Length: 396
Image 1: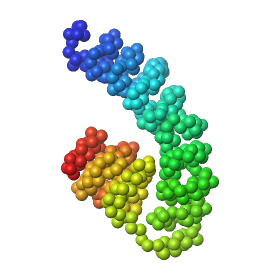
Image 2: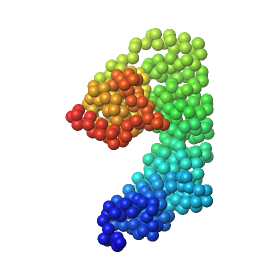
Image 3: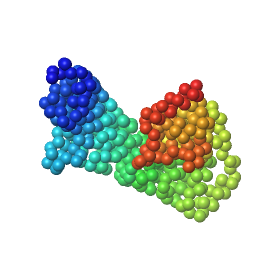
Image 4: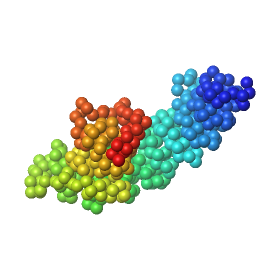
């Protein structure tokens, strides 16, 4: 039947079916309907030459769907076919990695970020991308990136976010940490200090502690480092503010003399009143942190740990770009779904989602939402988007 005489629904079914003849799929790759071409982009049976046509599709949504498919198209194939199809798929992916649309490049990065057999040239191209949403997944998770690759990324710094992503990568070694510490990127250095699995030389840690007298936002992650040598702990005790001094004194790995000195020092100081900060003052502080690029998930978690309800609410509101009344409304409703959805909108992880349910929603563990598989969010993005829209409308 001539394509002109077939309705769109029929062509969509053909484009989605693995039983459709390859010749027909090749024709559909140039179909006038975006729905048809998008369906074809998702079909694992689409011939490689048709995929190459779709890689140049005028609609970036089609190209993004194609990128996601190609990254996983080789799963479960016989060895010979797998090798051949993988080569064809990655050849098309390399073309898409140069796509002008960030969405397309980000789709590739998300799909290949943890593949052990992806071409190094593809991984390096994505890691060097100037768009953080493209580079970050690969920098954080790709097993193909070596220490030398990471150090080169810090040195070249295609964007400031590149260095931050390297600093956040799990289990980076001392040489990579040295490169981040020498980068003069204050936000990346804070991310390094907040990375519990990052290996940092004692000498580098001493230097960063000394510099934290000027970069006071480094002090909180320093106090929470999983390993804090005695010399570092003593140096910190001389410069941190009162509420962090309490946290430092609570560590179980301090030597007895320092623990006694901290206890005596705390006894002479007035109790912290930051938990009683007014909403307006907290909001002003949260906006200041956001403007300087220092409003991070660690900031929120620190406020939660210290029981600073006004500050935690303000940080969440500013990060999620909603009025403070929306966060207060979710807390008043004791809405686990609402609070978790606001955390998601803020760009934070479910770790923060669990934390704010306890402090802001006063929810016991039995009523709070737990993290989903792999530590992710237990709700779909559609539901979280609906929750935030509902809260905004209800609070207004």
